[in-house]
Image 1 (cartoon, rainbow, N blue to C red):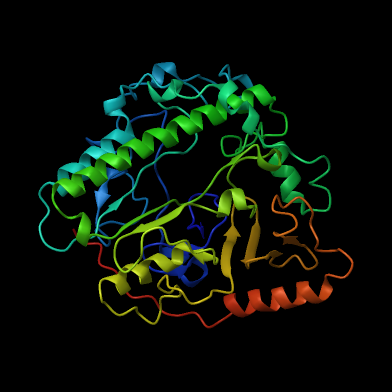
Image 2: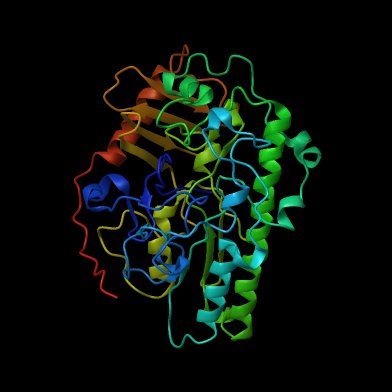
Length: 400
């Protein structure tokens, strides 16, 4: 499993394309994410390609979206109007999309990747970036009905009573939600959801995952049809996880639970053996060095990740530096057993979990008796990993 790069309010650190954590990047150079909601106009001046596309690195800034089309999204009529407080959906941000499957972004992106693979020549690197699974949970048929609330009911998270006690205030705030505020769409709150509502949401989420799985399979079949599978490295991962009732929370935010930080990481091809499992903590910051190493290219000194290999790894670092929405700066060190989270500029506030004894991260050991030495050692390791000198990044051409 790997920790993830930053997307909106996601608690993360690595920059996937540059192999550096966010704290090493010139964050002020990043463009604002100007995409409209998926329930509004289509992205781009004429097609979806200005937001969701198959592209190579350095051709466009990440998340560089167009200003949107003026014509309404085909499924706009099926989406509820009004605020979350007045919503009539079966569950928060969940409904069955009326969009035909062939016009859905997941199918569309896979189609563009397949078209590209049919004609590409010579060495290539493609980033096929799917939008789902992501809220709103709105898969089209037949995926919208693939799982029922009854199917997922036995899998619903079972929050531990009082588990948010003894944790930083942001945890209770995230569980309660921000209805009636500017951040309502980011977090309407999970603590007030009924189990049957949560089951509806998760069933929709699983439908999106299955639709994605089928379309990734289509892309791999196209690679096979060109006879390129044997000489192509394929990496599958995600930019973040989701809280779907975990700890009574929804979606994503500046809370460093494994539900958000642990994402799939599957590598096929290159020097890696089939069915090999790596249990050491790794991050997406390691993927750029891994690709360079597999291609026989040197890894630049300024990249902080390292190629995936069999050498043991002691920790992985996750950062939420200067979250403007919640005025938090959160940094986390995860080892094979422990997770320590430090709230920068809030002395005495933090989290410490024993992932071996408490994999659900329900008991914060930050103030627990007998943990001071462990906490100090982990904090020193975290500070050592994040307070090194800032390295200069190379300039990347954005010319097409």
